[in-house]
Length: 334
Image (cartoon, rainbow, N blue to C red):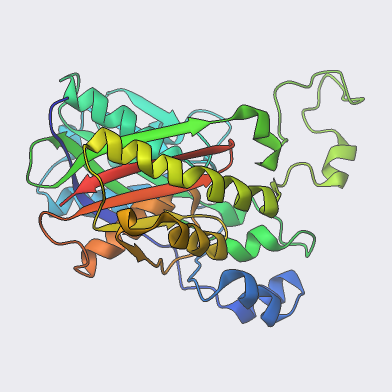
């Protein structure tokens, strides 16, 4: 496969950071409870009316300006999100319109918590085969608009934040080279972390009237909010992420990397995985932001580059596991 580079990561965080005390007040729980889950990670909440496409657009405009490019230079948009603006059309279409791109293909990618890895793999293969020259890869999430904030099941609200990260993919060797990218999904574990409604499979079942898409009893049950089994998510990460790193290293032709980022819903699980990986993972990079689903890995990568923690010639592994259930890894080299 021809060399593909990841250029000019840009991030967007909406508004001011939300403190543990502020979140505790929203959830009517103690600040200690929130702090115990979030472990000092920064979280941001997008204002009402702001979708992932808006966050990605702000980051994309800065990215194009920094690289002296125009929206017309983009040949393909690939957008990874678990919290799309609308049921349809996809957020990639909305981003295309907001940026003022010409009429080009737009793809939304939804692979659970491995969205970024899936989008990266799709984009790099399109570029490597010469189908598209310049691909805008966007990741953005507004989980605060999806999670429950009524005090019931507050874990997700404590563990997650909103944000976006975007980059361009092109052939060449002046940016981060994408050395490997792999992911696995086990759909039999879909209910480990999922959101059932709104759904397209129900028409007249569940006493659902033909002219209604949301049965009242399901709303009362909270089935339109995400549910998570944190124990199952921890088990998945501890069991599968070491083998995901091995698969990525094999594809990249490496025996080890200089550093590794583990993105996971639970900071404690991310730390435990890091301890389990051993010397082949190099140094484990701690993340400053709360979990942002598809945007978690590229946001962490952007922070690492901004801090000068990845020097020319060094390699980095990016690992994640979660909804789907899915897990995987990528390797990039500076």
